[in-house]
Image (cartoon, rainbow, N blue to C red; front, side):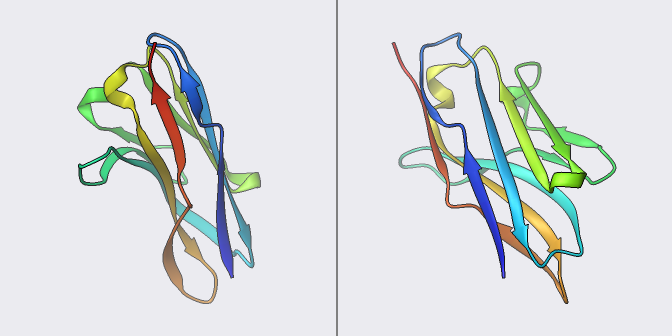
Length: 118
């Protein structure tokens, strides 16, 4: 059984920063791609950023230059550093990971709320 546990969400003023973390645990052989998605009220879930186990990153245009995704392969953990936050970044943020156990499956975290408001 694999679990993804997220932390680091909260309330922040516009222009502020937050750092999200997501740790994968369980009987893991290796972890391939990891990523962050978000879902705002009334909207579909959208990709925010992804990172391969080799460190190649990809960002949606709206967060380029403001957000940074990184990972610690030894800890099976992915991070999302969010700077210059805007009200439109308000959403529930979910991490996901392609995890190899006996099979390769995609797992999701439970989500963490990020609210950007003055």
